[in-house]
Length: 153
Image (tube, rainbow, N blue to C red; front, side, top):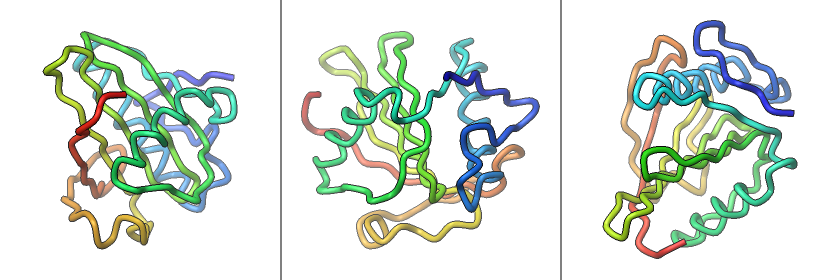
């Protein structure tokens, strides 16, 4: 069942099993606000088990950096807007992975990691990435990092 993320009334729908559900919901709402303000696009998520194609695409790209997460994926989102394919996975531990994949040959392509407030940096990322801090009215303090995608997917 899909969920159109509301960035005015933050809800933990679909994220209830997470120990950091409130912060994760704030991160999800923060993304929804960004896509609405920039593209006028409604950010919609679905349970991960209902959209395995998007989840597998993200996991394939992560292997470029030898990353495979043992965390339970709760929700995913995948869509195209203005020549860019976007994909998200929201994990139960509070990690959010997003892919920005420009469809043009010279398009921008990157994977981003965002950590919910209250969670530790996952061991898989701790030594490979440095995290910047950003404050958000919806998500509290967001820690984020990224890498540029080198291959084609």
